[in-house]
Image (tube, rainbow, N blue to C red; front, side, top):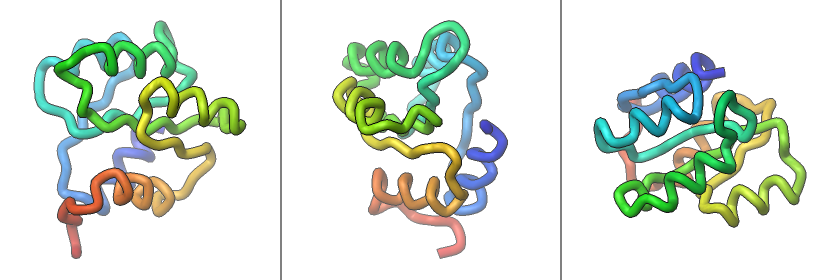
Length: 116
């Protein structure tokens, strides 16, 4: 899934990507550089997406980082919960590369796109 997401974004945007294999790994990467967007699933090893959102939003340093959730858990209740916790957007699996790009476009409407 990380390869799929990364490929879709790199094909459309001029961006640098950092992949984390778990929520704990993501939390270790966050202080190392400036990130504009965190894309995560609800179901992950060690800490889940809900916990990751909470931890990111509790930190004043990362409060402005956009969070996009992608998940098979896509009921109205699941969507409402992640948005209430502080995610900016939700994308249900399965999704197309265009669906992902459209979500990112909505989060960053003024960003330059590669190939535009």
